Image (cartoon, rainbow, N blue to C red):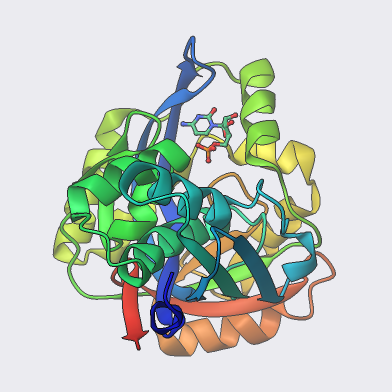
Length: 309
Ligand code: C5P
């Protein structure tokens, strides 16, 4: 590789997500669960910068909250994404250094790892000048993880299959969210395993999700609130009991409704407006069960390039 090819950096941002609805079917023979889920991308972004590296070297550095829990070896999902991309569309000599600034909670049920994988796919495809179109990126994303395609796509979407089959959902206006981070994280696989033992079948009728989608399309906060549901909530609480206090007590301060985000343990509060969100954030920050409080808006766009030099 010529030295001139080692110039440049590609910087991308990728949002976290919240599942407004998460209906989980029994485990499939391949170990995954079929889902019906309504994703919304929210304005908590991981920033990933890819710079060229020589001789096929792939490396990663991670900074920000929870960075110490993110692996630096090839089990890192962003490195796996870069490796998959060059194996499929490039040549083995292509190398990159990925620098990740974490703002999405680590192991928090907000698809932080998936965001980094989506970011690596996008950044490295630009860095390496690969001719990869959006449908091809989405296919690679699905190979890397169930939430990675949504991290690329953003907005609001209905997810089926294991969550990787996406259809855009109409969403009018924006929503104010407050996220209460827990002390510690939860493994998605462990939460699904607990669900197998204690729940086995979804308790969420499709009608509920249809009502939620109608509410989103017309910005009917009450309908959205009535439709919010998460089949994994009981399992997340069983594995991390303090979530229950956050879920219930937070509502006394003023959240419109509260829900465990994905597989948890982050608790998401949908607020009526910005004033409510501010008041709730202040109140939640004194809870012993809450490690930190973050505010965000949704929906926002998926992975996008901020700069390329
Ligand atoms: O797809 P991803 O690698 O992010 O999933 C992590 C784990 O979560 C899987 O290994 C599986 O145990 C569980 N999972 C599941 N059904 C899904 C998505 C994830 O059982 N639809």
